Image 1 (cartoon, rainbow, N blue to C red):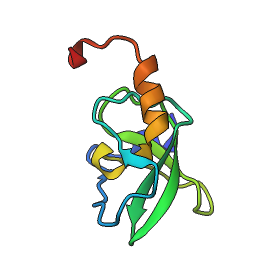
Image 2: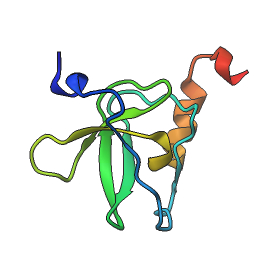
Image 3: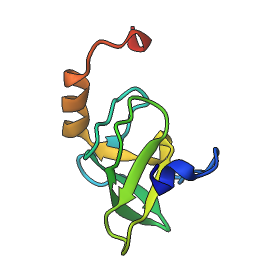
Length: 103
């Protein structure tokens, strides 16, 4: 079992977005399925940070790796704290299998 799987329930980070979004980015939709390796961003301490999805997340919180931090820094982060390139989100949504939750 990986270290991040041993965390207690509720250890999910929620970062408030206070800055203008970088050009070409939009909020990660609650129903966008994000596969492992998808690139995202979050704001922390008034700076944007690059993240990579560690595990497929069809819904709910997203497990991400902080690309710019030394060592291995992995967190569960709420979707409301995440942004994604709008073209990437459109591509992901087009390639998603039909989901009864979205009907």
